[in-house]
Length: 125
Image 1: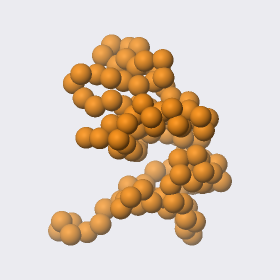
Image 2: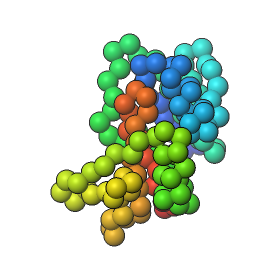
Image 3: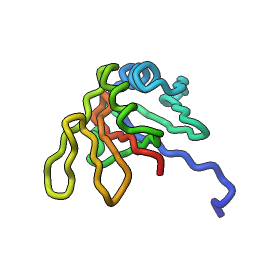
Image 4: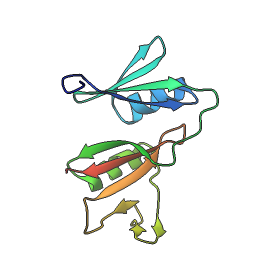
């Protein structure tokens, strides 16, 4: 039924203006205004962001960006003011930059958007 349809994800934020600035200027994505929110374009993928007055940040990663080098991307985003999450709990450990280099998977680093949603950069999978 959906094999040949184009799927896209969506999530909420509490402030569209802050989201537009963050996703467009800080992350460098193409952002366009839509009647009901914002449309992000990352490569061939579209993501829809909508405002929600009672928004609660997701407690899980809502969006992953596949990159060639997590280290280089973390360095570049840190210079743009992005703060990466530092973890040291159980199997989840990051270095001082916020990069997890677990031998069971690719290098990955998590950060939050202005609405508190979790995003990540993950090394080419």
